[in-house]
Length: 637
Image (cartoon, rainbow, N blue to C red; front, side, top):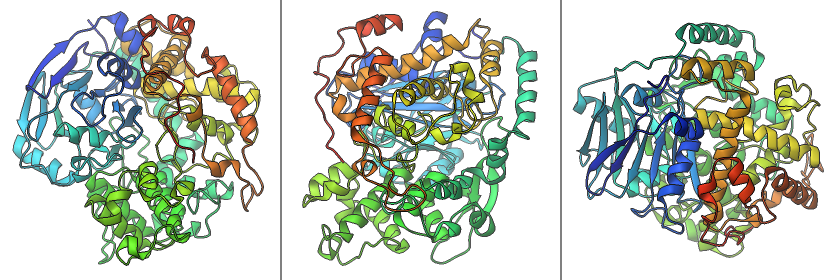
């Protein structure tokens, strides 16, 4: 029998309301494991190149892993993946919380959706039983109303629900999927894919118990892990203030994106940092399944202008940056209110803030004016203008309808040189970390399939001490500002380390290489859960295999070397602050990208070679490219 997982994949055809169960063997599970890797397998198998992401031909995957739901801190995450309506390429987004473990307890390791329902529907899974139910009464409701409606309809307050809000229903390409209003599959527009399939929600309730191969060892590792959280500095900080603790540190380092990525310092930082947060709007802490870190923050405020409800979540670092410093807004209640609107409506806060920043800079330079906005000024620092514009985007009104397509498509629609201020990579808006101060992270943005900040090593964490990276063969401190062969090697190795967390569904805030779990103990944990005689070598190969499959997907969709880039502003000198004058040299950066290709076994067009595919047990992908990879599909920004 399988240990740690069910050995069952649920396939749901929404077109004819049918479903079936696949039961792959152990070799298949050891090859693809779960999360982004398992999802990439099904997307490559079942999506034809060139399809419209919002058509019924797209495939949507909810994927746990072989260790999701184990009683260890951080082993709670799951992936939602599909062809992205925002980028036209590989799309994936991870979330924590309780939904992933609950799906495992209900009997399935993953769900693969095909087709489109003829009317609004939701999927209900309870202890191996599967039902596709009418969701007409839920369509148009926000995420809180959807959650409460399903709890009442199903008669169980303990169900877990992954749902979309009105943004997903209206096919906004950066709409997200959420569970419990605190946990978000935020990036790449997975909420819009759900909306295109008329799939309002997935509700799960399971009472089955996952069997561990060695429960005593799992228990011992859990105790060790939770005790280490109490003394491991990064985890101590997360438990105390959550991710809001990043705001001041990044500002002091000169890499807190401000004014649409122009600057790295924000003058109003003291009004939005962790001290301000916990002294004004903080209500309580939240957590994920079986996790001792408790990094989630809930906020509350009785205020007519910016009311905050603790049921609707609190801003994480990315929201504080994208809805705060990036817009030069230091009104913390307004930032938190904007975040709660995003949560209820189902908008990715990162893309939302970046779109507003783009609009504000276009207004600053006269590309947009009050005739375009119906009389509304869009100026940096104006919190009410931000909130107004978010409402316009959600409701598809006026300039909001144009901007709701994301900065790349909005710039094309606006014209007049707007693309100069539309900052994206592969069509995706950027999380708020300035690559001029972390060139390895900049490589990650350029080379990640989704321009994602959680799939890449952050150099500054290892500028002084690389102890946690020694098992990878990184023996010397990292130089955050260098872009050279050593940085390409660091990134190549570090990318695999971060990527394995997305494959195994493990939280970066609990695991390697920065936080409390070590590589040695992680391997021991996977052994104890699954009973597999695995190794660091094998789990890193899973991560590399996942990355290569996502790359092959993007190759099929026409992405190539011209898309492996960073934004224009990072090639320009930092105007002021601690990094004044610092920039990423474009020639050095291109050389590092090409070095990464060689290290990875990719050809000059950024395509994995047949030898590399064979090395990774991916022979079935050889010659599986019918769209001519190497042709750029993204405009420069």
